[in-house]
Amino acid sequence: MLRAVARIDAEAIARNCARLKAVARTGLCVVVKADGYGHGALTAARSAQRGGADWLAVATANEAAGLRDGGVDGRILVMGALSEEELPVALDARADVVVWRRALLDRLPDETQVHVKLDTGMGRLGTRDVEEALDVAREAHRRGLLAGAMTHFATSDDDPDFAREQLAAFRPFLDALPDGVIAHAANSAATLAIPESRLDMVRCGVAAYGLDPFQNDPADHGLTPAMTLASYVAEVKPIAPGQSAGYGRRYVADAPTTLATLPIGYADGVRRALTNNAEVLIGGRRRRLVGTVSMDNVTVEGEVERGEEAILIGAQGDERILAEEWASRLGTINYEITCAISARVPRSA
Image (cartoon, rainbow, N blue to C red; front, side):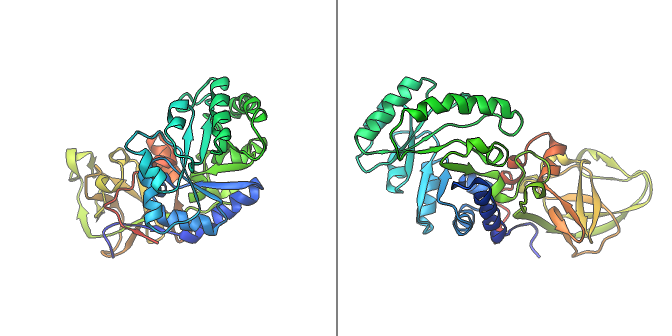
């Protein structure tokens, strides 16, 4: 038994990707940035390709290089900004890159494939000037570099009307482009909920890992969570009324009970804000996490045995704890939950 382990169901990722491709009925690009949203980039990439992914997308040049070093073939898109130092790394990885200024385009060798980005409302990368985007696209096409055109939705998970406004702003740009350019805009939420946004290809990240882009239940969309975060009961001891557990005595027993210590903590990704604010599965039952989450340990209430498995995220028996539950308790999103599982926790595929 390991003190902490993130078990990754590679086949769940493949099935989720197959499900998304069936829904989209178009090309599928699976986003494997941030170490595959915490699931392991190589595991995610290979599983996505088994599930029918036509493309993979990352945020950085080094992420693209890591995929190639790991033996991953196929089309890779680097979606993030690239400095002068990073650009050669992306090109050596045979990755497509995103451009929106002539200055970057003019630095690219003739074998590069580019995707021109129009900012229709995200307000980050890309140009908001349609004429500038068209100028870049036309020059890229003249040089034989133009592969795609893209935008990025800001609110498809909670305000589809604004996403549709973005799509409407994107269409005149697309209409002015030559045939054969791959148009892509939809993320996971748009793929599932805004059919007209699917265009030539969708870019799915969070849903590929069995996480719900709407922060509810992934089963609602036929998706299966791919990560189980597990630990074990390292110690069990009785606690009397008035005795406490953890830094700051944020839990003081008001009746005789039993506490179990799990050797996993915030250095592993169990956020300190879950102090007295989470549950753990042991023996197929929910057990209340009590006391301050420390760097390497948490404590839970319950009559359990040393050596029993503890599930912090995942299923055990008929019970399950979703990343979405943690996100709700923490006032954040499920993306952050899995990405925050630290490198100290081994991934077991």
